[in-house]
Image (cartoon, rainbow, N blue to C red; front, side, top):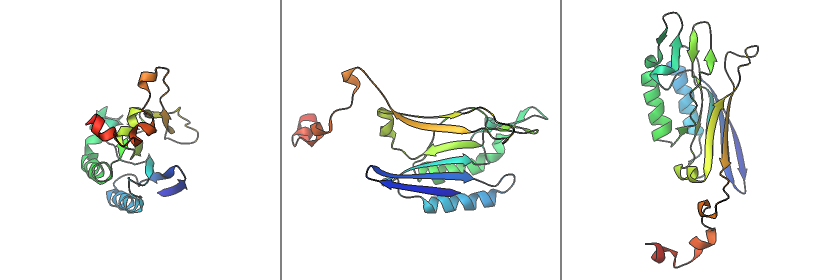
Length: 178
């Protein structure tokens, strides 16, 4: 894992790229995740994005085994439960959802590559957050590239625009809206 820290007059951004050990290496994955959580800045002071190859699936139907045509994601359930508590509950991260498989091998397909953000839920009122799996480039990797974004919503209807900041600065705002 590696974290790029960006700080500017509009705030702070941490971009954390993840590669966790594959196979039955749960202890090594847990150690990396613990190191990442220790390195993250508080949600209140920094927008953080975690993205990469997690090497465990987040749902029972996110790993398909070709040989027996069965779903095998349930074996990652305990690890996903631990991740959910450690990152989503304790740190406020949420997945930028996309449903496509992102890893393909002779054994099967899975959704190992994911993006998580700790943005406040209220940010979704006037911004769109998203994620998409891009085209396969099999000559380079068995993993699909994943793209993510945040964009402000554009509206032509004045009623859909947020209130101007000076409205909230009025000393009578609280008493008029209570």
